[in-house]
Amino acid sequence: MEKNIKSLNDLTIAIHEINKKYKISEFVDDFKNAIGKKSTDILNELKNDGVTNPFQKIINASNLISDKQIQTLVKISDQINLKYKYDSYLEECSELREGFLKQRSDYFSARATTSVKAKDTISSLFELSGSADIILSDWIDKMLNKIRPNTLDIVYENLNGKKTKTKIGHHSVSITKNYIDAPLIDRYHGINAYDSFLLRSFYDMNKNKWVYVPIRLIISLECSADIQDL
Image 1 (cartoon, rainbow, N blue to C red):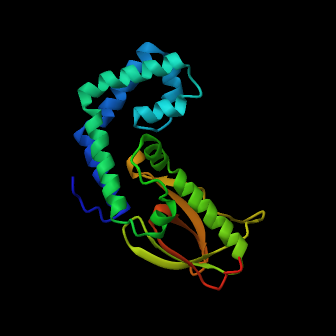
Image 2: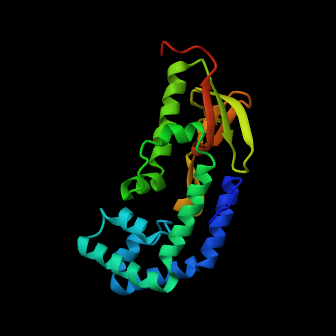
Image 3: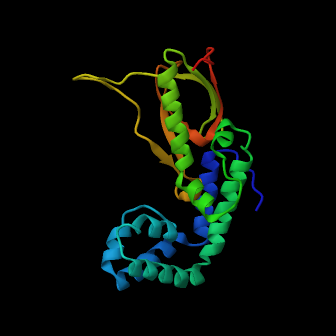
């Protein structure tokens, strides 16, 4: 599947179309109904997690349910997969995500987070979990604190595909009776694991406010001053 996805929003639209093609909403209903007939305990654990991929559900619940219950989940997934061709669905979603990231392989974020080239199960789960995005965003926060009052020059692609250039810097949290100035709560863009990307807020020195930055879409990141000693 060769598609030129021009923005993160376009990726979500494409994923949504694949969801409709494979009737994923019906798949989820059948999956939950089948679980409910086997075990209400499993259903309660998975009911409100917001995850579409049943194997992700299994991973999320692995610390909360027994090995026997996990085997039940796997068996149910295998049975329903035959009806909805879920493997093909996952393959199409994966191809879209990989194509989107391949077009942006020269971005700073891609070079900073790509340490495993092999296509194995562990690296795939690590990628879809967004763990690399969290590690990178935490590193940026630490750097901003370390170099203050210096700033970082950043170029990133916003959700609509527009390249944005600005400066980000450390900004102390301020809480008073009538006013709160603090980082925004982390958000995840997307409707499933394949278009899910972390949005972390940084203080935009040009706009004098906190702005969300899609971590995986950071094109370049440079210091505005000589910080080689750091």
